[in-house]
Image (tube, rainbow, N blue to C red; front, side):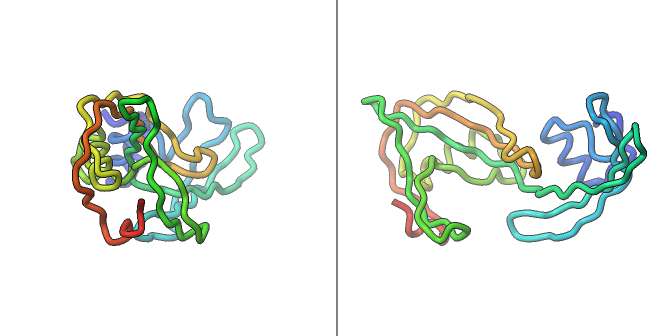
Length: 173
């Protein structure tokens, strides 16, 4: 079963909900003080979608809306070298129009295991392979208004390999 509200969900929402352990989309969960009465797509882009949920508060009956940014799942790796130093990458980030320091991270391809995505991103962006990967957490990125699930890994036993950066990652260091 994909959850108590599966009959109210669109096919792609059921698929997303199952993949990310979510049993809701339209309906009400016990810890919600409102009911989702409808949902529509406001924007569909390359890296994110914006969904608008119509809600009704259970006590007052007042109606409102929730805008939700929906992004695909991602993997992030915290590499630690043999001296205990954290390894980071620098990459130009368009929204801030500047270079930012971050850990290697990227999207999880359809059907890909999060650990495999983390290993791939570590090699692509940092030019490293790991002997040991430990899953640290499942993150909900900006849960106030976004539905994006991240998988955080610790990488140890690092060895250098050639990077395999994509076009948008060409300026990374």
